[in-house]
Length: 212
Image (cartoon, rainbow, N blue to C red; front, side, top):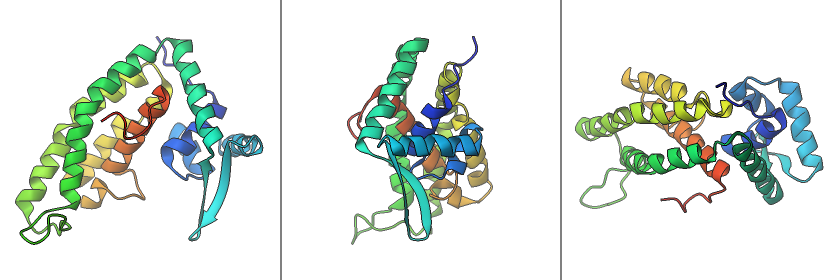
């Protein structure tokens, strides 16, 4: 059975939520869409009060209004019901939750290493044993994460790419490029994980922070 392709208009709106303050080009690149068509869809969403384009700090991007967030969730819910994928997404989300706790704890340890004077001391990455333990966890979740992503990608095309990008980022981390753990400006392990989690939450209409 061929995976269901989401409508471009739905992906444009969804991309704003999942990618976080993206440009039309970034949304188009993520799902291999025509950039001009994405921009047109966003302008239409803006006219309907669902999205807005803003600039600050020399950067420009798109964000959703409350109405746009609700509209996006409505569209995703309709898509799940149309293709009968809701049980599959719910099942993946249930299995993702314990994996997410492991990953979240590892990312916290990557950023924070408590010492005698400060339980919230920043990790200066001078303790290689500490960092290697974290990296082992980030590596150990790869197989399960990629498998979950593949399950959903077999049903819904928009989930395609998460697993491959995670594996690609992990290979760079293992090659010594440690910024690929959590750098916000590239497809790092942490950024991809957050995006996948947000994709699940948006699909099921769950507020972030309530599924822990």
